[in-house]
Image 1 (cartoon, rainbow, N blue to C red):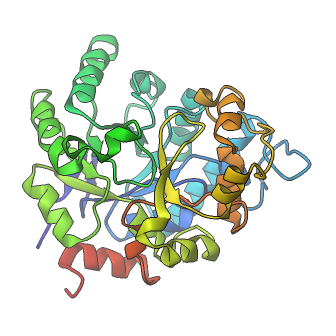
Image 2: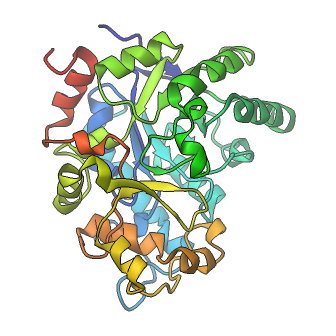
Length: 366
């Protein structure tokens, strides 16, 4: 099946497959650059850039090599180098950057990404009401919010149009089968009415009322059949995250990749998170330590997300998300937090991005 190109602002994505932004360090230069090179949209995660190349670009580190405060955890220097390295792979093809609305220094990080060369900014983990303000000095940069309901899109469009005279260049609607943080409360993630195939059509209809905004479906999309199903429901693009973990070019450690490959369906669960939303990942030794009260002490060195209130929520759930995601990136199976979507157990091999993109476009045996 030949997919129609996807237009997002001034940019054309030849193959309408967006690689989801995954942090810490799962989608940086190698993965994002490779996806864009193959005609999709590679998306660099802005989370935790301070640990890039073993903290080489963080100006201040704690004794255990942790970036101190948000300005170092979200390192502008490192983000710029990540984009520079990705550009060596994909040239001038469109590149995206995923920036959580819940992070501290959100506006500064958006501006850092724009200066680094991001063509498209994608934001979830909260309703990004101030997103247009953050890119006002970068008129060529497209902005794409992530929503979970048509109501959320309506609120955003009304507020953006009234306050900023701008609408989303595209919108991602994410169902509750995605990896990492969800847009629903824990119990809501399991309700039939909140599943992607149900929430997608109303978002498509709402988007038409605001000038036919392109809608991208995300959360549990796995293969060519899923993609065609989403297109039949009105989506013009799809976003996949977990499937790209199983690629040679994925920036995650081999331990991270193998942890997902080794996971069973029952191992993949929703957990409490200091961000305030439930998050999906693999149940590992970290969760055993949390239950036993032996997990590493929360010190809040990085001050990464506003909802955590400087470690208050981290202590309540039993772990620091910045430290534990960083550990996973470094390949620490003992203390790491390994995010994956609900279909992560389907990963069985490591293939190249080129091979994966071919499978997604033409089917597993195409």
